Image (cartoon, rainbow, N blue to C red; front, side, top):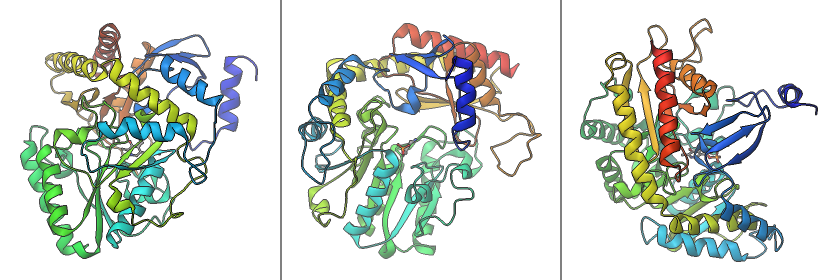
Amino acid sequence: LGDHAAQVVFGQKHVTKGLGRQVEAVLTKAQGSYVTLGDGRQLLDFTCGIGVTNLGHCHPKVSAAAAEQCMKIVHGQCSIGFTQPYLELIDRLLPMMPHPSLDSFYFWNSGSEAIEGAIKMARIITGKQNIISMQGGYHGRTYGAMAVTKSKTIYSEGFHPLMPGVFSMPFPYWHHFSLPPSTPTSELSKLSLNQLHLLLSQQTAPRDTAAILIEPVMGEGGYVPAPPEFLQGLREICDKEGILLIIDEVQSGFGRTGKNFAVEYSGVRPDIMTIAKGLANGFPLSGVISKKEFTDKLKPGSMGGTYAGNAVACAAGVAVADAFKEENILENVNARSKELFAALEALRSKPELSSAILDVRGQGLMVAVEFASPKGTGPYDPLRNTSVPEKLSSRVAKRCQEKGMLILTTSVYEVIRFIPALNITKEDLAKGCQIFAEAVEEVVK
Ligand code: PMP
């Protein structure tokens, strides 16, 4: 393969163009909050592999648990028998659940597959077909998950027809109603719930609607927390109309927002919950969780998957759950979150940036800064010709990278998202905030 530069050229030639890429480099090593590239550069990582390595890269206990499991049994196969780590993982997850009714588990590999499982289950449990998802929602790239994804057309453009029976309603985000960022969340919630009411009376009747699917913090749609009263409103309508509420905690779960699961901020009970990402800190593992009374309606053999609930991934998941408790991760999230918000608000209060920064929002360490679109750019538009300048948020992210930090944008709007490791140190968080502040000043000026 040759030296680093030659490896990059090899990758550019032979890896599908269908993948986007943040850095034209080989990631050779990663430890804690830092990633090392093949050219020797070390970057502070505020992406966590898109919200996955929540306990930092190569957490010693997680890596050790996986290595140990590799010497016992790697592949048991969930339709052949149980494995010890599969059962231990359920044992660790049960007390973390946002509601005691969530007591029946099924593991898979990716978030998308968990969404597929949740849709299948909702259809079997209710005997109904249609699914309502949120405008701005993201749930994955397989055909069912793609159908309920409403955050960017790039994920589905040219791939139609998608799974039928999907309807959408606006997530309570001010852009969706052309309102200013200062609009109270109670007003946005009312407007969204009103749209749901119309949807159920104009397009998909409750007797045809199996489930409403929502991320408690809309992730790829802009890092917007769902107001508690909105989730409570959804719960009420679901109970009244016999519709299931599917809560997608793939990105917001496992301490990311300062609670085990983001849905806890509302006190709402999910009928089905999907998990992935932080669950195994980088090993491919996802889960669909519901209650036994529901999952008993599934015929044995109707669910499955060759690698689903792999023993090594489950062993990593057990170690994650243990480290999460032993290392007081939630305490760190909440302390660092306060510092992150303070730094971002200080940036927004600078006179030269006050009109450029529209919004600072989020929960825990799932935080976003939204910029005003520079004149003539506006939200991402696949139809737009390429002469329009690159998004401001992309330029800020690039500048951060040049200064030694990996950070991601999100949504069709001008949004930068902060997803550092949940155990990031005070010093590394401050360093990241400093790099971001310098990058913003340089790009916005
Ligand atoms: N749901 C949510 C909320 C997500 O953020 C993602 C991934 N970004 C998915 C589902 C899909 O997960 P995966 O990429 O593992 O298929």
